[in-house]
Length: 139
Image (cartoon, rainbow, N blue to C red; front, side, top):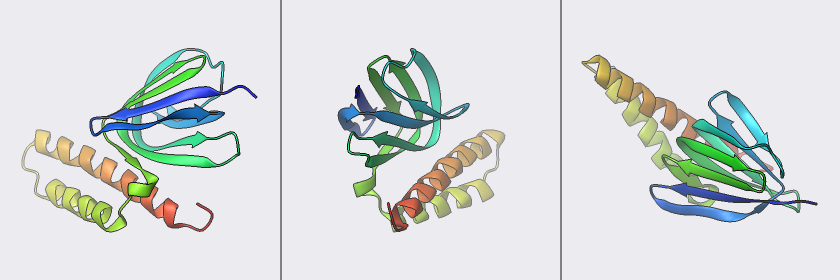
């Protein structure tokens, strides 16, 4: 079975590098699935989960807070604004970040403040959904 290489990089540093049989990502136009020999693609990512499917059938989930997805026939590169490994997920910290974003949105005085607070809330809500899915049985 053919593989592809995936690199996930964020401002925090190098998050993941390895082989995969499939990669799923939250592209701006909807979730995309990338298999080996996929046509070249460059798209933006929205906050959500990147899932890396390994040869043994297991999946590694990563949260990305937006960014860029670049696809070459045997290489997938995720340049994330922010990223989080499943093993580093802290539900209480994520819930606090969402509450803080909601408070900033409620207190926004200008359109610029409101737009920034809305973007932070979208990311925080997506991050919280990611963490909650990890807690479900079977993940």
